Amino acid sequence: MADMDPTGGLWNWAAASSLTAEWVHGAIAGALERSVGQLGSEAAVLCDVHHVGGDFPTLIDVYLAPETIAESTAASAVAVRLGVAILLPDDTLDPTRFVLAGPDGGLELVHADETETDDGPERRHVRPCTGPVTGCERPAA
Image: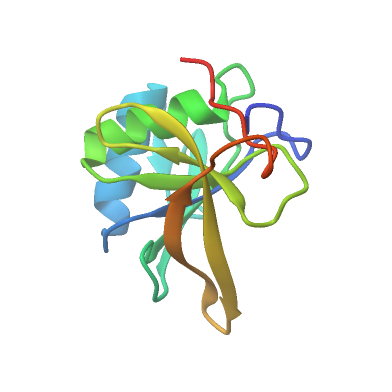
């Protein structure tokens, strides 16, 4: 799953609700136990939050993310704190496949339709990965 980010310290997520930057920053700070601020601040972790359409309208870009914490673990903890599902890329080359971190802390491999817009990627129609035909395996708990 999305735990081995080759860019080191950059996470790109989408939340299934329209959330303020302050709310997102607080949830990430609590999950990572580090200060989180907007781009240009002196916080340990930087975070840009912006909004698009689709089923996951809040895009969350986390910079300087700690490499000692698995991205899926962090996303799961943030999803619980926010009470909403978070979609993050998985580690395959399949552009329709994602990891869904649920508000209950669970992780699931899913497919989603993505449309690129001027405001950023909009994601819709999330559905579970099923069977060997799609190459999806269930994530380890």
